[in-house]
Every structure is written in C-alpha cells, then in structure tokens.
Length: 151
Length: 151
DNA sequence: ATGCTTGCAAATTGTTTGCATTTCA
DNA sequence: TGAAATGCAAACAATTTGCAAGCAT
Image (cartoon, rainbow over all chains, first blue to last red):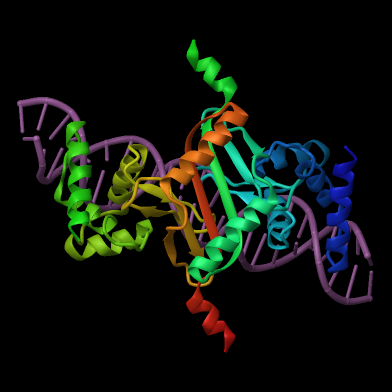
C-alpha cells in the first residue's frame, strides 16, 4: 500500500505549490479519503476524522473536498438520492458499479483509460463538443445481495 | 410529432392499469415532460404547467415525476449541482451530452441500445452483478459556447 | 362512494456561507 | 506577521411529508 502514501504525497505537493496550507485536519481528511476503496461520502469522512479530531466540522470537510474536486484530484460520484461520494484513489476516468441494495460502490476495471479516451473522441467528433469529462455508472445488485434475496 | 401522443398514451395506459388516476394536472405535466428534447428540471415543468394551472404545486410535480421514475417511464439525469433533469422521450438506455457552460442537455445518438446491452453484459459477466441500469454522461462545451468564448 | 390526488405549509436533507478566532508557513 | 483555515451557526436549495379538502373512477 505504498500507493496510498504516494497519492497523498502527490496531492500535498500540488496543494502546497499553490499556496494552500496542510493543516493536521486536512491531512486526516486526506488519509480518510485516499486509500480506501470505499468511495466514502461526506458523512463517512466526518465520522472517520472525528475519531482523531472530535472538534472538526462538516464545513471543513466540504471545503477541502470541493477544493480537491475543482483541482481534479478526486472524483465526485453522484447517485441522485442522498449525498455525493468521492473517489480519491484514481483521478483517471473510470466507470463505477453501484449496488442499489447495499449501496456499495466499486471501480469497474473492465474498461481502461484508453477506452474512455476513445469514446470521448468519437463523441467529440460527431457532435462538435469539446469533451472535458465522461462518467459512466452501472447500477445493479451485487453478488452478495443477490444471494441474500435468494433465500 | 405523432410520437409524442403515442408516448403519452403509453404512459397513460400503464398508469391506469395499475389503478393510478389521470388528473388534468397530471396530463399537463406529462405533456410538458414528453415531447420536448429539453430535458427539463422540476422548476421548468412547474413554470410550464403553471400557465394552464396556476394553482399547481411543486409537490404535485415531484410526486408524478417520482412515480414515473420508479416505473421506469422516465429517466432522471443528475448533474450533481442543482436539481435533477428528466428525460421522458426515450426510456431506453442512452448517453447524454451536457454543456457545462450553458447547461444544455442532449441525447447522444452515437451509441445505440445494443451497445449498452453489450457493455452491460460484459460488466455483469466480469463482476457477478445483476445490472439494472447504466448511465453515461459526457460533459463538455457545446459548439455554440465554444464560438462565443473564442471572441 | 371510495380512496387516490391535490395543494398548502412545515419538515428534512445535503450543502454553502459569514465571520470571529486560530494557526500554518 | 499575514494570509489562509477552522468551527460554529445561520442561510440555502432541493426534495419530501402530513394532512384536510377535492375529484376521478
């Protein structure tokens, strides 16, 4: 899991380069955000960071998350109902798979980055749009929830 | 535009079959929802129906829209910030193209329904999920907004 | 006549903002 | 030291809910 440290270091460097400060709270949020495959929402980040910093406020989480989102360091996953989730591990475009039963969110490895670049180019060419982002979400029922409902 | 009447008729039949009632307000909302390529949000539907029914309330719009969404008759398009938009024309899976500058939303014709079925099957096979829905959104800048910012 | 639907207002939920105080660089 | 970040509370926006009265079937 050296990756996690690397990814955090990347973000730290990038923020510092722009004059942003790295407070201990921000470091804790980064740690909660990066390096879990959980795609947490703001509430989960809050609960996680609160263990270390019981004083932390939701506003602080929102502010950092928005900053990182604007800078393209994390991906926002919007499921329509309820709050947004965040993917801090992989800023490259990739699809997500969401279980509508238990709410689990996982990355889809089936299509690589090249695949996204390819379909983005095709759409750009046929529509004249300058494409900046593409998001693909699959909704369904995960194997575990299927088993449970089989009973 | 016979299509529009057809589509409305389809929905009317489907609702009536389940014991739902077709009030004049609901008919007006359906007309506002189906048969414009605008992908309206709730506010736009509200303004539209209000011309005919100045008394109508947002709650009524929300209730019908949720009913139709649950029944798979319309598609919800969630852009993260601000309210959801709806696509009543085409319940089959298809991608959307969103201009981040002017907010326009259009259907992407590049990939057909078969294409979606194909990638859904591939994901299902590789992950064990039972896929129920796939949504693909391309974000970018439309040709018109590109020209405008060129000046 | 029955019970689904309406429309109002109030309640919820998720997120943002203003500001005085603290703190990193 | 000075600008940026924190944390609190209040403000906001989108959506949902409860309920009395109305209306489609």
